[in-house]
Image (cartoon, rainbow over all chains, first blue to last red):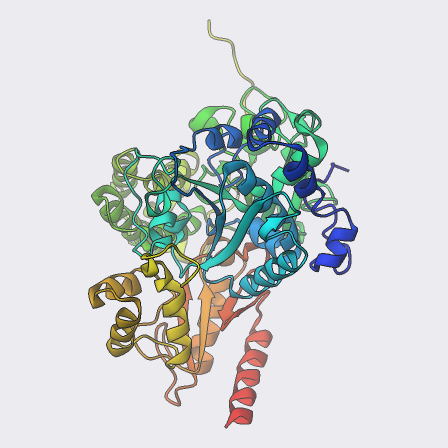
Length: 453
Length: 151
C-alpha cells in the first residue's frame, strides 16, 4: 500500500466542507507557513522537496517560483491552471471535486510565498459544477479567516477568484491561459518574456497546475526532507494517475513513484488488470500527447528492467523505446482496439484544438487528420504512411508552443511501433473495415539485448 | 468585474459570455455579442473573435437540451461511436442538428476529462457518464418530462 499525501482523506465523509476538513488537520500548513516561515523559506522548502510540475512538463516548481520578478510597486499573481484537457487526464477534476479545501490551502501557502494578493483559478468551462464547489470552499475559508484581509492576524491579504474558461485545450498552455484570462483568444505568446517577468496584465505571474499546488501542503506539513524521501531519484513525492481505457477499475490513484507499471496495471489496489479477460496491446502512459508503447515495451524497458511509474523510468529508452510521465493520464488499449483509429481520434482532437497561429500546426494537424481518416476508412495509399511521418516531422519543434509537438508525437510513435498495422490497413482496405488487426506480435517478449561487437 | 485589475474589465469576457448564453436561449446572436461589447466598453470585434475561438459558445440557435458527446480516444475505446449513432437514430438528427420540435441538439466534443467514466456527455452544467443505450433513453425521457413540467 503506497503512502498517500493528497488523497488520504478523500474518503472521509463531509471532507468537502470546511469543518470536517479542518478537524482532519486541514489548514495546518497555512498556520505553519504564515506564522513561522518567510516567503523565501517556503520557496526554499519547495525547491528542496524536488517537487516537479504535475501538469505535464515536469519542471521543478521551486525553481519556477524563484524566477518571479519582484519590481517595486508592481502586483504579482499566482494563477492555478485547472484547464485540465489532455485526453486521458482527469486527476485535477477529482482533486477539486472531492478535496476543494486542499487546493485552497495550497493556494494560500503558495500565494504567500510568491507575494500574490489576488490569485486566480483558471478552470476549464466544462467543469461547471466544480466551480460551485470551489466557490463554496472559498467562501468557507474566508468566513474562517483563512482568506481576505489580515489572514490569521499576520497582515497577509489574499483573495482567490475562480475564472471560467470556455472550451479550449490550448488554454492549458500557460501563456495561452494568460491571454484567455485577459479576455482574448487563447493564442500562446512568444517566450521570452516569460510569465515570471511579464505574465497576466504584464505583471510577474506564476502559473502552476492544481496537483502541484496541492502538493505544497504536505511539503510544508512534513518538511521538504521527509517529502523528498518518498519516491525515487528526481521523482519525489506522490503522483496522481488517472487510469482509463480497457481496465477493470478506471479511476484516479495516488502512487508513490516506486511502483512498477506491471503492478499498477494488474494489482487489485490500482487498475485491477485488463477488463473482460482481454490481453494488453498498448498503453499511452502520460496523457494523449506522449508516445504510445506496445505491450512489450510498456512493462519492461529495452534493457530488460522492470519499468517503474516515474519520470525517469517511463522515459527510459528515449522516444524510440520509451514514453513520458506527462500529466499522468494512463490509457490502456486491449487487443480489440485499432491503433489507426485511436490515432485518428487524437489527430482530430489536435486539429480541433490547434489555435491556428503557427502554420505548421494549423495546416499539419488538418493534414494528419485527413490522411488518418482515409487510412482508417480503407481509402489509404501506400505512400500515406511516409507522408504522415514527414508531416509530423515538419510540425515538431516548429511552433510557438508545445501543442505542435503534442500533436506530432502520438502520430510518430504510432507509426514507429505499429507500422505493420497501418500497412495492413492500406493493403487490405476492405478487410480493415470488417475487423481489426488484433494483437499481432506487440506483446511478444523483447529480444534480449546483444552487446555490440 | 471587480475581480480583475482596474481598467482590465475585458478579462470578464468569458464569464460574461457564459452568462449571456445562459440568459438568451443557449446561444450568442450578433446582437447579444454587441451588447456584451457595450457592457465591457470594448469593440464588438473583440467579442466576436473570442466567441468564435472557444468551443463552448454556440453561434447559432440550439435546442432546449444540448447533448455534447465526447468522441476522443478514451471515450472511443469505450464505445462513444455507438452512443453517438444511437442518439442520431433515436432523435433522427445528424451531429450539429436540432430536432424539429426544438428540444434536442446533438454536438460531438473533444475530451471533457471524464475518460475513466466513459462514454459520456455533457448536459447543461453536469456530466452524464457510463452511457449506455438505456441510459440515453432515460435521459431523453427525463428531459421531455422536465420540459413538460416547466410549460
